[in-house]
Length: 320
Ligand code: UDP
Image 1 (cartoon, helix red, strand yellow):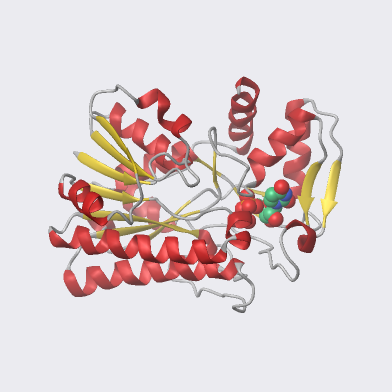
Image 2 (cartoon, rainbow, N blue to C red; image 1 turned 45 degrees about the vertical axis):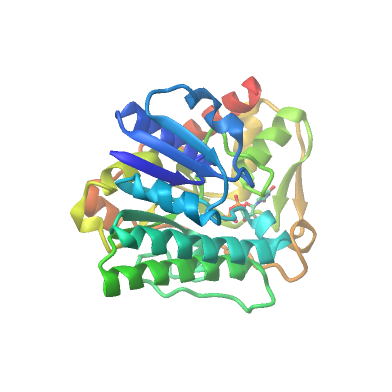
């Protein structure tokens, strides 16, 4: 297959590019390096079937041409990371909504399969755990910018589903749950790369809130494995699908685990949310996916434990 990955120089996109090339597919990456990095794809340059274009999805003539040449489009280009989202709400909304609009519009011309990367953020502050794809989405008020990210991704989902329903454009929506692993940067807020970097540097490990909030982290290799199977599963078309892991941890326990695994003497420091993000910031106390749907579709079971993930991320930061 010939595949286009928007945001292909990002953390998930670069791992996906590599896996597709390993399977013998041709990969075109379109990335404006806003949060992605050329370092993420440097090792792919020169591999047979790999091409990359440093440009934005807003360059519609280029986007249209690349989609035309592809059999499948992974639309991963987006504003990501809670810190970035809170600090740059205009950029977040415009990037997420407009990018998906143009990708779907051009893919629709020749009915190319589009995989839309969505997020567990869309479940918002629902406490109906584990989150099922047909669960209600519970958003906070509009002055709290975090919810703009959730809403912009929900609009992407509505639009993709509308294209499928009304115009028969094949789409698959994947909701990623706290995807982590080597190459992820802590620059935009993500917790694991931040904790690991802090622990290795002997700096305080910054736990936001009281640390009782819980998450279930997914290794990027499990996510990529799922994506490769979903694009060849006809029953996935037109569906919204959670991709995650159900092994939960509290953020305080995560900080302690990182400190133990790195052998660090860093203190753990609790930082109130309004200092970490913005006044009145709302976090979700618990986020866990239901994996029943994806297991039924492709037999998905995440293989990597949190220990595995942390060891690999620690090793990555040490080598870096
Ligand atoms: N977090 C933290 N310290 C950090 C970064 C994040 O305690 O340096 C917390 C954050 O408040 C959230 C959890 O870790 O409760 C996961 O944060 P992340 O931004 O990785 O993903 P989220 O689940 O918020 O989308």
